[in-house]
Image (cartoon, rainbow, N blue to C red; front, side, top):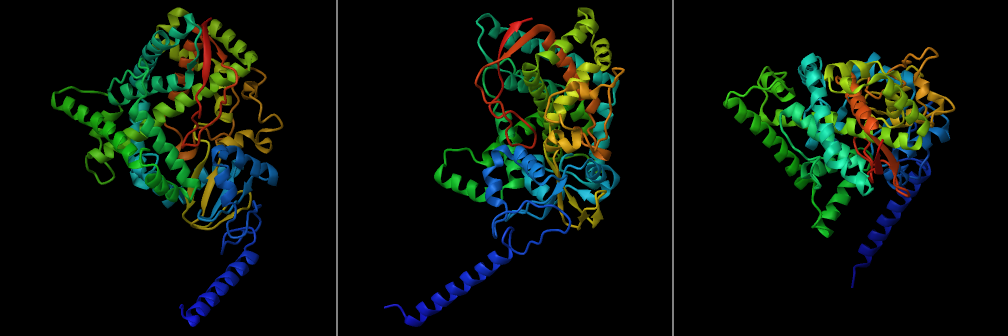
Length: 510
């Protein structure tokens, strides 16, 4: 027989716990325990003790639109949305605040512990995950490559050559029998082949293969995992349960091994070439010749981090921008018509076959630029980002930011906010980027941080823009695309903004 006193004690303890939980639920009736709403900042009210955790987890597949709805419902440009298990944070889409964080008071905002913990396994201490001196020497080294004219011309040559391979071996095959193809997957292979060849001297030839690329699949998985870690405190439990109950599913460690093996093979190949006296003038060579913040030559781990960080920069952002751009054109025949008019007026066959000339002509095609900028306004390559306040600060809108606060800004939300871009914010309207005289309008980096802002502004901004437009010009000149009906074109949750289900087109010669 159980001891009566033990039963009594258990009963008393349970009652005490229940009383404490009830009291806490009464006090913290819309937020996590011990969290106090910051004064003067609108907030998204949640459930007792849990805050917005259940709502957040339920909306992860449509995270960016969920955040947009929060801002619209509260009619504000700055808010909080506390959730149990997530650190204290402030969201803002106010251009003044964004510019203040990224530029004016840049030194006060670092990547922070959560950023590092979420992405360390994939990005290591590479440029996107680095702070301070570690970031400075990497940026300085990369800047030498992106500012070299020869590299620019070589970049154009490679892009044009790889584009012709993609056209002849992939797109043309779907014309005769009018079968659809996945533009998004194809363009990802194209940018992967191009950038890995340019940056690291490795010829992948993935665009001409029907097979999936194991490295790319694992790389994408780890990016999605990193993005989930930022918002879902339940993720470790989910991964543990998956390992136990679904052991056939690849684990993060297995994906990481594939990614590491790829990077190691690239580095080994280059070291072997150097031993044979073969010299390259590319991104990898620059980093192999440089020294880190300790004055030491880079070891294989540091080179691995370099390779993976720049693949995100060179592959993902361009492929996604091109995918969202052609998707937008498929919905906007009016815009496509105007682009074709500018294209026929400016680019002859002779110019297309002369890379330096093509580069210069495209740089002056204002409507092409307007379409590209409008694409990045509505579909930014990095839809949401985060930093960490080192010291107390006050933002231009009066928001008080205590030291240790995580702050997030969301270019995806910002681009769709009527308070930032006006009543037609959700419309795809390239003309907003053109003045009455036809010149390109410029907006502040705080309003349009598509290429980041301040000291960490994208090094390859101009190069990426012009190379993407070279691709657009060559594809648009040759092909007319029609969307396959009844497909769900939406984003996936990742560090960037890939398409979750791809982008299926029928294609015909123009």
